[in-house]
Length: 156
Ligand code: HEM
Image (tube, rainbow, N blue to C red; front, top):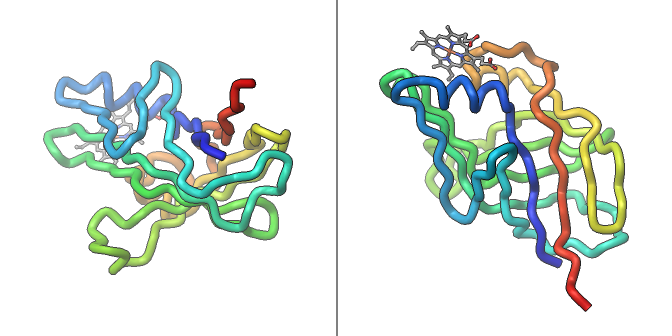
């Protein structure tokens, strides 16, 4: 079933970038930038009512740029990979050509509510690699915004 990941990433970071004179937040490859969140289309088909699979892939890129090019973060090819307590969110390495570089683990996700067509997170904790991505402005273990996976409900 089709659907998307709804994840603002970090609202205060988006505001920080958008407030810079040269700050730009842009999306590509099917991601949608909405007022309060970002949608990444589901690539792995999910079945309503079934447990989340061990790997869930999403399409869509979002890029944050500013500070005269010194700030540049690309979130691309988001993937959730199962761990003991939930899933790990990883992204493609920005300089990777066809998977030539290891993916970056950004955060550890724990799920709060798993309904048949909806899963929402309880915590999205930044990893140390994720902290370096943000120039260590946030500490490892600090919270990014909550995320949810939403399946499209077919109309009758
Ligand atoms: C060019 C040099 C930079 C300067 C002068 C600078 C300056 C600042 C300042 C003054 C703040 C506090 C803003 C506030 O509280 O509203 C801040 C926050 C932050 N900066 Fe930078 N910064 C620079 C580069 C970077 C880079 C390269 C990154 C990431 C790759 C980055 C990521 C962040 C983050 C994540 C925050 C916290 C935003 C929030 O959630 O409130 N900064 N920076």
